[in-house]
Length: 202
Image (cartoon, rainbow, N blue to C red; front, side, top):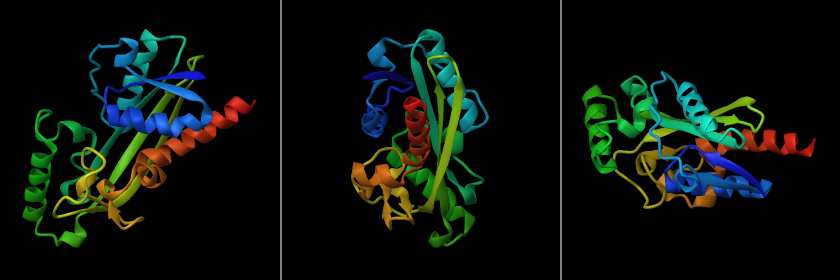
């Protein structure tokens, strides 16, 4: 089994990548499980920049391993793309997501737009640095709407208020298997998987 270190402490995110990479016989390790406790300052101005910053910091600590960093977030068109790269920090890092939802609704209502115009999209950007130091980027998006109230109890983060038009449900109403078919992270991951599969066949 091949080893890949993921630049994350988020157990939900680690589980998602474990499921996605298991078919290619990769063992995914979160940073904490390999003893990496350093704080990585994400001061990039885009999802790509932040994913590269995280991947390079991890690669420096584990030069012989393949490492993978993901930077993702929710962008709301009526709010000029916010929260975007600040999704996790929106309203303050310690603010519960229920309160972040309230803040988003308050700001959307202030725009005067009808609820059916609360368009939004999730972006996922993956940065893989291979064992030999080669760097690859995989990025994708999924589009939908912000719901006026939470729906569903699965998922994490903004999943309960993001309605995915492709499947007609909120992300929090999807099972992990369903979400792993249509999410932004799943789409970017499929490109990563195609690359790894082709590479490992040679």
